[in-house]
Image (cartoon, rainbow, N blue to C red; front, top):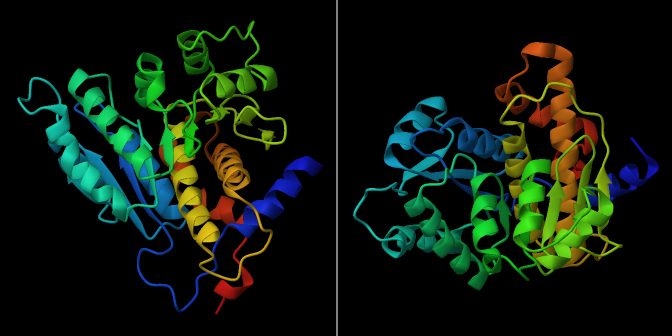
Length: 322
């Protein structure tokens, strides 16, 4: 790990809350994942479980009824809400979004996209939810087919500086094209900054051999350069979104002064740290799982490595220990 990454880890440790006796259920993170449809049930599960295994108190999945029935069998630890619907369901997007929006005041962060699909009713419902989350200043993590929605409607997130986008190289190129950014094939520092600036300063995590993370500014453009595994099986990005979701929840606690914090860091810096920290944890999970599984590695192998990666990279605050 580079010296710059070691310095970033020190700062990430500052936003990790200790487990104190005064804290009650839910204070250490209430995170929801919107996704899960007829064809995709694994992705929202992997994201929500990464959030839970990293340390969120409450981890929700908001999905379609058929997906809910499946996801509930994966783990009893998740709260699964069968709220979303796909066409040709007769409900309107605004009607379907209403119970999701009602949940927002009880959440610290919201992940949208894992297993979402491109069904028009699902996409339109999510558009209503994103608008409402912005109004309530809920931190967002958008991945997969939520990025497809952003391609179609970039103004949904443009200028929202509580938003993290996590595109792979292909999704990055589509987003850049959608907002008229010519990256000239540069998906590294300059390209990442250009896309973030075109979207008004959202945080972009461009996944790849090295992760580039930027809100468009030089001071908050960093790389995730930790060693990862060499197997590119699908679903590993879901560990990233869930991890960022939990770190954003802890960031809220840090900014609210829920414990004796240090560092005096503000919203923009801590958003970057949450995004970078999620990248670092995911890459370490991938490395550990690859060492154990090699060519057979699957996304589920990363889930079990999340607490180990956390302990290895960040470690438990002293005040948490018995």
